[in-house]
Amino acid sequence: MKITSIRAHPLAAPIDRPFAFSQAWVDTRVGLVVEIETDSGLTGWGDGYGPPKPLASVIDNIYAPRLTGRSPLPGDAIWEELYNALRDHGQRGIAVQALSAIDIALWDLRGKHFGAPVHELMGGPVRREVRAYATGLYRRSDDTAENHAMLREEAQGYLDAGFTAMKTKVGFGFQDDIALVGMLRDVIGDRAELFVDANHGCDRVQAARLARAMEPLDIGWFEEPVAPEDLEGYAELRRSTSIPIAGGECSFTRHDFRRILEAGAMDIIQPDTASCGGLTEAKRIADMAWTHGLRHNPHVWGTGIGLAAAMQLLAVLPTTAPAFGAHQPLLEYDSTPHPFRQDLLVEPIPVANGVAQVPTGPGLGIKVRREVLERWRMR
Image 1: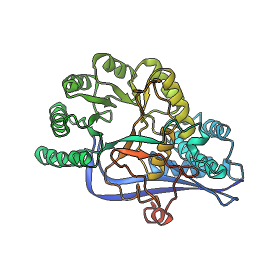
Image 2: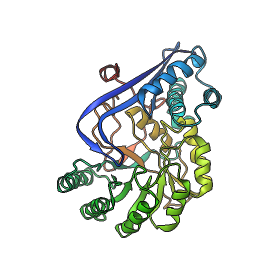
Image 3: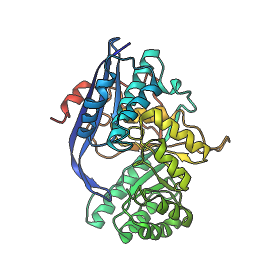
Image 4: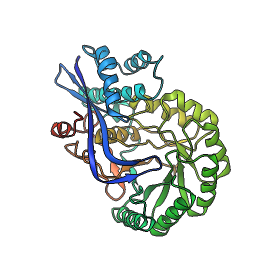
């Protein structure tokens, strides 16, 4: 089996009702899909989390020429070669995000070639189903009363759908944040876990003040409280609060996560499989976290292909302790408006009663609708 072509598909679609996190308002959903074709007739699909056009440029101009005409089977060897190709210029960021998309597509190809799901090739499954938490509850309006009314209804909708955990966004200022989190805790009571995410929208002083105020509200974790570069700030906050500190979606490869682990910066790491280096590197990072006793809950924010890749990884993540009551990793289930996230898949990945089943078909266990790629392609 030889690779005959590699194509990057940058995608974008407007949404009807924008939403905001601490950094910006979102009015368009984007994605980067990689398609790898072979002379055997098999096609592998990958997902890259990052700005689509720059990722496509790296794939088309750097990675694709190196792989065309070669076997897709040597996993680690290909990963190291592509990483080293841009090591002097991109040890993180765009270069690694593009590599992630290629790596996921290659794993999809290998699974299809051997007639097995990726999680079996990676040594699993450790689990066949994963509890999901709903990522949503973004700011919908600058009017506080209107915003709270909409988010109250949204949170109740997640409860009605069977979710037992959900995540909201903070980083809009102390009074705004604590009022929002308090309102949501009142709505969901003890029926679901509540996580908060600042998207590195606080400095150390703001993060510490907010953490102290949220402690009585039983917050499951405080995600990305400060800038991803500020590992000392993470560690300082972690020492000062009882709320578990999470982060890592803006970090890349085992080298960044080695620094995070050595700094004692986080309780929960959240590398994005479609960004940190793909399935190959995500598993390496997971094993490092396991040896340090840290939890690993992958960040998921991309197309249905990226969701499927995260599910394959979740199937093989080790538990942090060998016990009946051991914590199991969670699936981040993006529930915000997105015209092509699940529409891209012939069979979407559902969550029923707060639980998702790991796809068991060959490779990632999905099939892609080409007409959706064409509809939302960035021209």
